[in-house]
Image 1 (cartoon, rainbow, N blue to C red):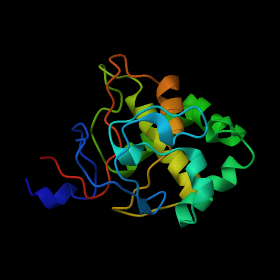
Image 2: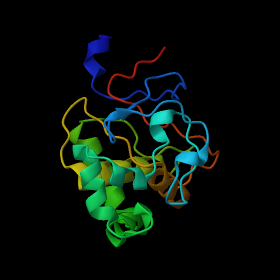
Image 3: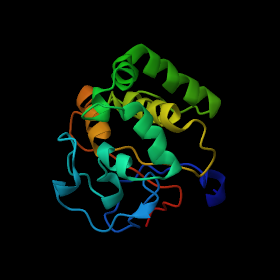
Image 4: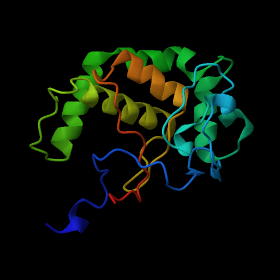
Length: 177
């Protein structure tokens, strides 16, 4: 199979810990982050890679175009997860199911949406996509923006993987090694 055929789509392999520390959301290199010291909202958890270890409150101190979008919904809330709009997006399971089915149809995939090993995976993925769309609109092919750690954890708690293993964020240049 020609590897270029799926060059624009993420793989399903777990994220390696040694990748670039450039964060698109903050438009800067965040360096190594292996502790929770970056969190200012009190709801972040340690993620496998530095670019996933971003707090929603960091967007307030940043002027990137993507940070501004998150700031608008953050408002005066202590955490982005406290926003009624964000909570509404995450809690509406039927809408996330429909979003997932539409995305599957749009990509003309025959792949089964619901995994027997992780029945919530497609819902989590739909929540990530839908919130990214809410914050930033259509990004286009090969463009991805990280979500804050607190928000990712909020979604994972709502729709957990039974074995507790998650894929993690992959930028558009990700390749399996």
